[in-house]
Image 1 (cartoon, rainbow, N blue to C red):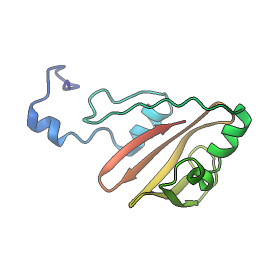
Image 2 (cartoon, helix red, strand yellow):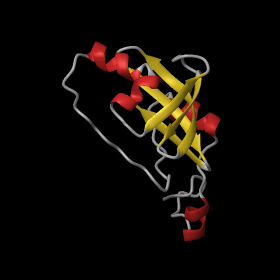
Image 3 (cartoon, rainbow, N blue to C red):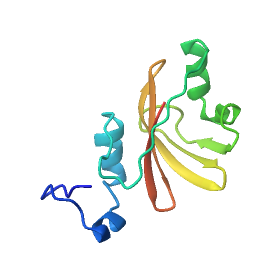
Length: 126
Protein backbone atom coordinates (compact mmCIF):
# COMPACT_ATOMS: atom_id res chain seq x y z
CA UNK A 1 0.00 0.00 0.00
CA UNK A 2 1.53 3.34 -1.07
CA UNK A 3 0.97 6.82 0.33
CA UNK A 4 -0.70 8.94 -2.40
CA UNK A 5 1.49 11.96 -1.65
CA UNK A 6 4.91 10.32 -1.22
CA UNK A 7 4.38 7.07 -3.16
CA UNK A 8 6.14 5.30 -0.27
CA UNK A 9 4.74 2.23 1.53
CA UNK A 10 2.26 3.12 4.26
CA UNK A 11 3.30 2.40 7.80
CA UNK A 12 1.38 -0.38 9.57
CA UNK A 13 -0.54 2.24 11.60
CA UNK A 14 -1.49 4.24 8.48
CA UNK A 15 -2.61 0.99 6.80
CA UNK A 16 -4.72 0.09 9.82
CA UNK A 17 -6.34 3.53 9.96
CA UNK A 18 -6.75 4.02 6.19
CA UNK A 19 -10.38 4.84 5.46
CA UNK A 20 -10.20 5.53 1.75
CA UNK A 21 -11.91 8.23 -0.28
CA UNK A 22 -15.14 9.86 0.83
CA UNK A 23 -18.37 8.19 -0.25
CA UNK A 24 -18.96 10.96 -2.83
CA UNK A 25 -15.48 10.44 -4.31
CA UNK A 26 -15.96 6.67 -4.21
CA UNK A 27 -19.22 7.09 -6.14
CA UNK A 28 -18.06 9.71 -8.63
CA UNK A 29 -14.39 8.86 -9.23
CA UNK A 30 -14.37 5.11 -8.65
CA UNK A 31 -17.78 3.49 -9.22
CA UNK A 32 -18.74 5.63 -12.22
CA UNK A 33 -15.33 5.16 -13.84
CA UNK A 34 -14.77 1.48 -13.04
CA UNK A 35 -11.73 2.24 -10.86
CA UNK A 36 -10.53 0.24 -7.87
CA UNK A 37 -8.95 1.79 -4.76
CA UNK A 38 -5.57 0.07 -5.03
CA UNK A 39 -4.66 0.93 -1.45
CA UNK A 40 -7.87 -0.34 0.15
CA UNK A 41 -7.08 -2.86 2.88
CA UNK A 42 -9.71 -5.26 1.53
CA UNK A 43 -10.53 -5.96 -2.10
CA UNK A 44 -12.46 -8.82 -3.63
CA UNK A 45 -13.38 -9.87 -7.12
CA UNK A 46 -15.84 -12.51 -8.20
CA UNK A 47 -17.01 -13.65 -11.59
CA UNK A 48 -20.06 -15.77 -12.31
CA UNK A 49 -21.14 -17.19 -15.64
CA UNK A 50 -24.91 -17.21 -15.97
CA UNK A 51 -26.55 -19.45 -18.53
CA UNK A 52 -29.41 -17.08 -19.35
CA UNK A 53 -30.18 -14.37 -21.89
CA UNK A 54 -28.87 -10.90 -21.06
CA UNK A 55 -32.44 -9.61 -20.86
CA UNK A 56 -33.32 -12.11 -18.10
CA UNK A 57 -30.17 -11.33 -16.12
CA UNK A 58 -30.85 -7.60 -16.41
CA UNK A 59 -34.46 -8.15 -15.34
CA UNK A 60 -33.31 -9.75 -12.08
CA UNK A 61 -30.39 -7.37 -11.39
CA UNK A 62 -32.40 -4.23 -12.12
CA UNK A 63 -35.01 -5.19 -9.51
CA UNK A 64 -33.09 -5.28 -6.21
CA UNK A 65 -36.19 -6.56 -4.45
CA UNK A 66 -35.59 -9.78 -6.44
CA UNK A 67 -31.94 -10.17 -5.45
CA UNK A 68 -32.89 -12.75 -2.85
CA UNK A 69 -33.74 -15.08 -5.78
CA UNK A 70 -30.02 -15.58 -6.39
CA UNK A 71 -28.62 -14.47 -3.02
CA UNK A 72 -30.80 -15.79 -0.18
CA UNK A 73 -29.10 -13.59 2.46
CA UNK A 74 -30.43 -10.42 0.83
CA UNK A 75 -33.70 -9.08 2.21
CA UNK A 76 -35.66 -5.98 3.14
CA UNK A 77 -34.76 -4.02 -0.01
CA UNK A 78 -36.29 -0.55 -0.06
CA UNK A 79 -35.87 1.65 -3.14
CA UNK A 80 -36.25 5.39 -2.57
CA UNK A 81 -35.85 6.54 -6.16
CA UNK A 82 -35.95 3.44 -8.35
CA UNK A 83 -33.04 2.00 -10.28
CA UNK A 84 -31.61 5.24 -11.67
CA UNK A 85 -28.17 6.81 -11.43
CA UNK A 86 -28.05 8.59 -8.09
CA UNK A 87 -31.03 6.57 -6.81
CA UNK A 88 -30.75 5.47 -3.18
CA UNK A 89 -31.81 2.20 -1.58
CA UNK A 90 -31.43 0.29 1.66
CA UNK A 91 -31.16 -3.46 2.09
CA UNK A 92 -29.92 -6.22 4.33
CA UNK A 93 -27.30 -8.83 3.58
CA UNK A 94 -27.62 -11.27 6.43
CA UNK A 95 -27.59 -9.17 9.59
CA UNK A 96 -25.83 -6.25 7.91
CA UNK A 97 -27.93 -3.24 6.94
CA UNK A 98 -26.58 -1.29 3.98
CA UNK A 99 -27.40 2.11 2.52
CA UNK A 100 -26.54 2.29 -1.19
CA UNK A 101 -26.66 4.58 -4.21
CA UNK A 102 -26.64 3.56 -7.87
CA UNK A 103 -23.62 5.01 -9.67
CA UNK A 104 -24.03 3.48 -13.15
CA UNK A 105 -27.26 2.18 -14.69
CA UNK A 106 -26.75 1.03 -18.28
CA UNK A 107 -29.66 -1.33 -19.08
CA UNK A 108 -28.44 -4.69 -20.31
CA UNK A 109 -24.79 -3.78 -19.70
CA UNK A 110 -23.84 -2.51 -16.26
CA UNK A 111 -25.27 -1.87 -12.81
CA UNK A 112 -22.86 -0.33 -10.30
CA UNK A 113 -23.58 0.93 -6.81
CA UNK A 114 -21.77 2.22 -3.76
CA UNK A 115 -22.80 1.55 -0.21
CA UNK A 116 -22.08 1.88 3.45
CA UNK A 117 -22.49 -0.57 6.30
CA UNK A 118 -21.34 0.43 9.76
CA UNK A 119 -17.98 2.13 9.06
CA UNK A 120 -17.31 0.32 5.77
CA UNK A 121 -17.68 1.88 2.31
CA UNK A 122 -17.91 -0.34 -0.75
CA UNK A 123 -18.45 -0.38 -4.49
CA UNK A 124 -20.23 -3.22 -6.28
CA UNK A 125 -20.60 -3.84 -9.96
CA UNK A 126 -22.79 -6.33 -11.81
